[in-house]
Image (tube, rainbow, N blue to C red; front, side, top):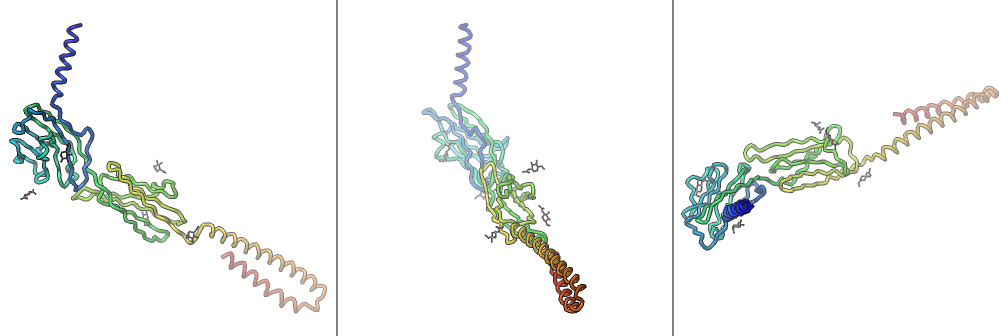
Length: 298
Ligand SMILES: *[C@@H]1O[C@H](CO)[C@@H](O)[C@H](O)[C@H]1NC(C)=O
Ligand SMILES: *[C@@H]1O[C@H](CO)[C@@H](O)[C@H](O)[C@H]1NC(C)=O
Ligand SMILES: *[C@@H]1O[C@H](CO)[C@@H](O)[C@H](O)[C@H]1NC(C)=O
Ligand SMILES: *[C@@H]1O[C@H](CO)[C@@H](O)[C@H](O)[C@H]1NC(C)=O
Ligand SMILES: *[C@@H]1O[C@H](CO)[C@@H](O)[C@H](O)[C@H]1NC(C)=O
């Protein structure tokens, strides 16, 4: 029993001894912005016995040396080519335990796992964390072009990373499935140009919403496009109704004329003397109506 307690306290002592000199780096992945500067944080404990001359700070990405510092100054002989002239420590702050690295003009190739290692007369430790790079998408450009049977709406946004999520809404209902999206990557920078388009064959007064979401940056571009139409569905409907009315009216007129004719014809048989007058009247009116009817039908 006593032995167990002793063992446990020895273990605790060992752990506390081990963690006495502890450097601090970000727990989560750090996001850098394309072409901007990025600070990779790393701090170490300093006490009264700490000595700058015995301090070695080394930043690495895998086996590549990005920046190193010893004998109280930067030592860049072994620095990886890709980081030349882009790195610096906050030399004035090293005495406060600041071993953070400033990386300038960040590119997509800078994404990866970075390690900060600090060794002093009071202890040493090495820790790693991930870095990812992202870029904001530009304000989308809207382009219209007329098709034979409608209009093509094209939205383009560029200079972003990583690939975005797109969504199109028509009056709050999702119409993304009716759209097409093309993603192009710049061969030099690796940034994306995104184009998304929809063909509208029927325009009604409605609002169309384009949404671009760049998740790691929390960038949300939401642009509304108002669609207007002169030819409303309702007008079309009423035109159709009028059309129907005209046909009905002409059929009724035709029936009236036919019944009038019938009366005239029966009368004519009874009174043959007035025959000439009636034929003159009856024929033109029949033509008129049949003409009127066909023009409406067409
Ligand atoms: C280190 O110093 C720089 C410059 O003052 C500061 O921006 C940075 O936040 C410091 N880093 C840490 C981890 O304290
Ligand atoms: C770094 O900067 C120095 C001095 O400004 C310059 O001569 C050198 O060409 C630069 N190197 C790179 C790789 O940009
Ligand atoms: C879009 O199409 C996919 C597959 O064709 C389907 O799973 C999804 O539910 C559709 N989304 C909408 C909003 O209609
Ligand atoms: C839109 O119309 C163009 C030209 O007719 C055609 O090339 C394209 O595939 C159509 N796109 C969609 C999303 O239907
Ligand atoms: C659509 O809006 C325009 C302009 O506000 C208006 O002239 C037209 O009648 C509207 N059409 C419909 C279907 O409401």
